[in-house]
Length: 185
Ligand SMILES: [Zn+2]
Image 1 (tube, rainbow, N blue to C red):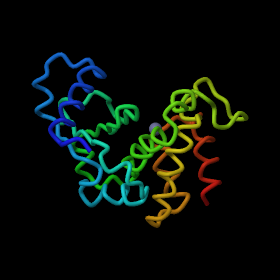
Image 2: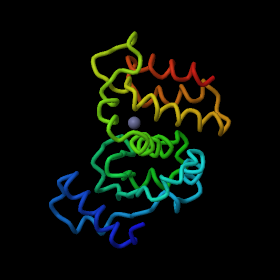
Image 3: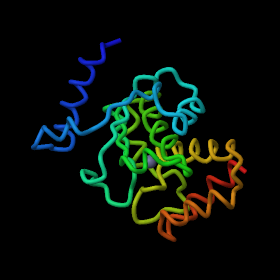
Image 4: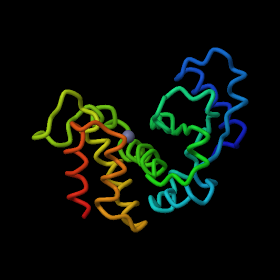
């Protein structure tokens, strides 16, 4: 196990390269929290996945004025074992469980690193093939399944989950989500 300061330096270096950060002062405005130390509303996601190998996965909290992903409140970089969250969203209740989703990305990568890139470009369901292999790919099938299973355990109904996801995605993406929900409910 690396000590925290060595690990933080590595992660900052990775962020600079991955996101082509020019002004490294930005790095001091970010929050860095290991998955095992998440606050209660997110700890539930870590507990749900029940995977010790995710304990050191780093969640980087990005102040809203530095956020660059628009409406999307989170992003995982599974190869780097890093997850980014927009600060205001990170501090919210995370009712749709994006933390479960992003941690599941890191888990999927750890399960089979050599397969991850290819799986992310391979359709999950051949009969609902659209223009892009997103979200209908093997990686997203895994991550959304974990997310929906978590929400089901939290007491949400199929309809409640579908209503939330409908607000986030295009009409043409919905058959993929319905297929996953059919498998879970
Ligand atoms: Zn995803």
